[in-house]
Length: 104
Image 1: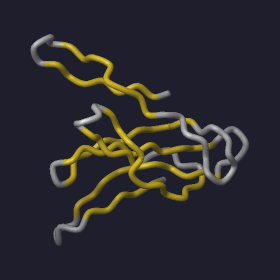
Image 2: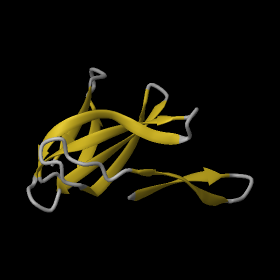
Image 3: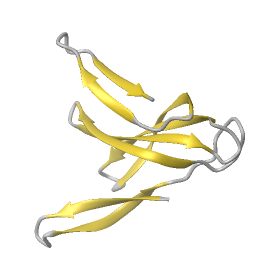
């Protein structure tokens, strides 16, 4: 599992607030592990993109976008992306305001 920590100003420290579950890939059914996590805020909402490289049997696994749910104090599965050996992701905003998520 990949742990999620939240900054608590009054404590001056991070407290563990949740995890990103090592979900099973829908295609293979095998457990997958995040190789890189990218976080960003869109429209006032926090997101976390987990780049999944493999499930230990294939690199053809889905990577996952999680959305922070304040009421649950946790990230929840929001959207899956078919990827092949994803090692990283980056967010870019064009001058037109369009937002792109690039996965490599």
